[in-house]
Length: 460
Figure 1: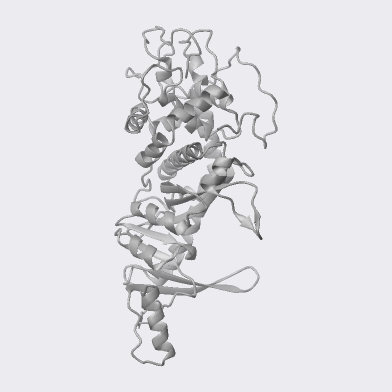
Figure 2: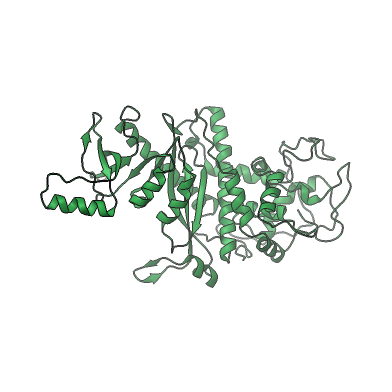
């Protein structure tokens, strides 16, 4: 919250502090409390050297709120973010919502780094050992996948991110490429890299997979496989379950009782040598490389045909995970595709570009999208665990609406501030939902179609 003019301090019922100290983001404040926001701002070197009407912490919360209310303009987002503060009655009557220009400049001052650090700090696996559908035996089911997000068609964005082409014709908008690592059971994205179309998904995946580790079973579609990426992912200590194309040589070394078989994954040189020896009829042709286990099966489609799946895994012993278990687990990978679709379709909205007109602001916005999506999915996982049900059965759209409503009604009420446990003059516990404030001094918004952004939707 900001003061447009005049003294930003005012004593009221024992409260004597910056009104901007009250700004939070509803039920997501537990995930991103004031102290953590201040920490990432300091680590990024973005702490203001003088008192500003839009301090860095407030701008962080504003950028997060911007990704909850994607169809609203900057000024309307700020109105919703600070709406609960009017219930306190602690500010001057001449308070005004900052202009779109002021908010745009504040975003630019903040930069990308605080939001990137914030996501990296909070985004950790959330599934418990008893979370329904989140594990295969002792392995946490994880997946890596990518999505392309359209951004405004500015010269800077085109240069930084590039455009896709179809039959020689460039697409209408530049696109930022995002590759993420996430939990299949909860849809929580716990790692991500942002790049351009000039960088392939495999390159970005090589970076994001460094967040994998022991106890995880990381799944990937056939487009991600390369020997180099497989080797890098396996070196993290995580187990792998990846689909591969028919072009990957998988000679049978030993057939196992469950119908799977042991094989070897070789690099390009090893595969070429192996193929030469096979063509020459050499009986001693051996493919050198990484030992793997292969699970091969068919999936019928609606047209009466079928599709062959070839999965390779680092789990070599069928007693640890049978072929049937691995085949069933692999199809949980699609849950992570749905997680990316939640951001692209429901949170951002279909047919929309991101707001930001410069590359750094695009990346800032994407980190905020990822953080708010993670916060929503974390709340959903907790609710599902309490009910003993699969998180997949909960509605993301409904959860998004709940978070939006709490941001509007209690945007100012952090669970940890003030220390006394009650807000001055309210007699209410800060964790309780607060009534939405009606601001008599705010002018009515221009009527806008729900499917279209407000006039100042795309800025910087």
